[in-house]
Image (tube, rainbow, N blue to C red; front, top):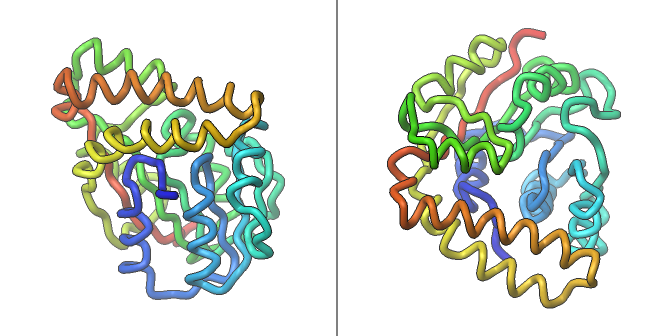
Length: 233
């Protein structure tokens, strides 16, 4: 299986290329992030917590993770987790916090160690006033994206020091072209309850894909990834 998220495997590669330290406590945030969690556990030889917000997502996560003894999927709200203060050396979130960013970042601050690292990837607006059909896509997906030019400054205002960033908007075309095919293949292996969850996901991504690939969405929708250091609590 491939990473079925905007940014594909490029955010993970970005992290490996820019994070020199070796974290011993890692949190991965978001559904469809199972392969990322497994890979981080392998790279850093540590246990990885994975949290999702929907019960159906948790079921899928457990299927994909299988018998791994290093990745632990759990059901939690991203903005109100059960973790301790200062628990993690690294938090990784790929296309998973754009809908409730402010409260989630506040929670990340609480559970991330001083001098810990935050690796985020987010859908961003490439224009300050995108047309209505683009706004409709954002609303349908419950997204409140930042403007590309304001992405870094937003995190700077939250007292995260930028280590590095990259514009990986080029991944979106491949993401939309391939994800539906991958999801439809996976759907055939699932039980009725799991299929119901996947069907909603497929319908949403189908709509986003049509807007991005056929209606000029690429002029207005991008994807940025960045690595920050938590220098101030």
